Image (cartoon, rainbow, N blue to C red):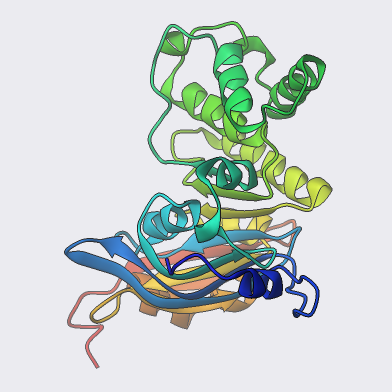
Length: 290
């Protein structure tokens, strides 16, 4: 990130006296991120994502979905700007950023002798030391109930399955009630019922709390069902790029699916009227050459 802004520039960014009022939401400006010898994203712009919006981040393997979420979370070096409610997150202290942004990695929480309730308590104490004991207990109870995890509260993490540990990891993020949720494939280890439970819980949190959430997903049908917007990343030269962004039903066309994934696919509707992506076959490299 750039050097610390002057009081005048910081005032303008945050909508202070004499400065323009920045919109609420998340905005990316010329974001560059990756690894020292392997840039992944270069100059990515993303229009403001408004509060109350659930965004799917999609695309084939190795196009930068996880890198994008880590960059926004402050876990990868970046150039450009990540603006949350007009504030450049690069200028916040780690604790301030932790309070505003909740990140769930693909990796499962470490198996340990801590019970699930203690893991939740630790997560909340680190990010929200301002909360009293009663508020902490109420927040934990609410998230356990929302996710249907009451039966796991007093079970050690090392006795839980991978899917159960993934749910506890999600609960550790949700209990903090951050302004922005960044969830990297939160349903990857879950069966069908728990996939729906997770997306329903995130959808409720976003709607009720006017938070924002970005979820890296491979299941495009979950994106169609639950998400307001979708961001599709694709292979580019020399770096990956934004192929499309918008409403999932508008973005996920047969043409886009061919370009992004190299498949011949169609969009149908189920008996309840929900759109579904049906991939018929992979396109060989020869077929895909103009």
